Image 1 (cartoon, rainbow, N blue to C red):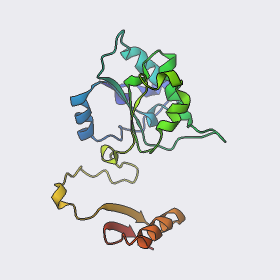
Image 2: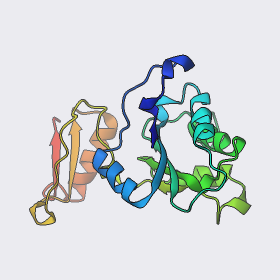
Image 3: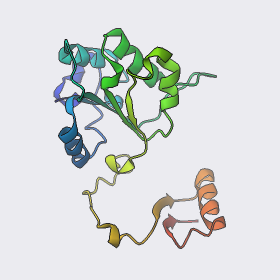
Image 4: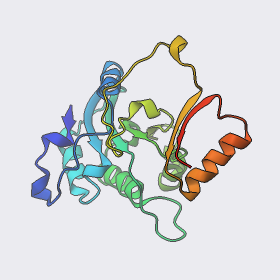
Amino acid sequence: MLRHSDIDLTKYGVTSHGHTDLSEVFVSALQKRFNLLALIDIDNIDENWDILKDILVQTRKEVYQPNDRYVIVHTDTDYYLPDCPYGLSILNLVRTFLHNDIPLNTLLLITDHKGISKEFELLIPNEMHEHNFPTIVDDCLTALVNTRIGMNQKETHFKESDIVKHGVSMIGVPRIHRNILYNQLKKQNLLDTYAVAYKG
């Protein structure tokens, strides 16, 4: 499996932002089910899409097996033009696959952007939706390592019987959107069932 960390990104004028946000436990689970051709984090290629093009060309097959996958991790903010219903990263991702004649059903997107499949539906021709559509995982946050807030903690695995709260909300210091979340949890009487860290 080719990773973006295996590539000298400086030749593209890009500085690597580090490793993928996918946990190694999740990568291992994917490798048991799929033949991973490449693992790429959009954060490391969105300044120069030739990086993805070169990876696709380097790993292209004459015939793909049903379990061949390019894993793309998309956890950062996307950029949207006014009145445009899809992000520029998703547009460039789809275009790069299509332009290089790589089947879109080999794309496995791991993201924290719930509902992002709607953007793919707009960009991919309708006749390709049934048999040549990416697999999108947008509801498995445990696949991701939280690297943005400096936690970088070791992964912890619990038995289901040890879980005593329905969820955790690390709200932290008050901000408008965090106050709204806290007030909703309070209004719905969920503060006893969710662990909430709030300095409000």
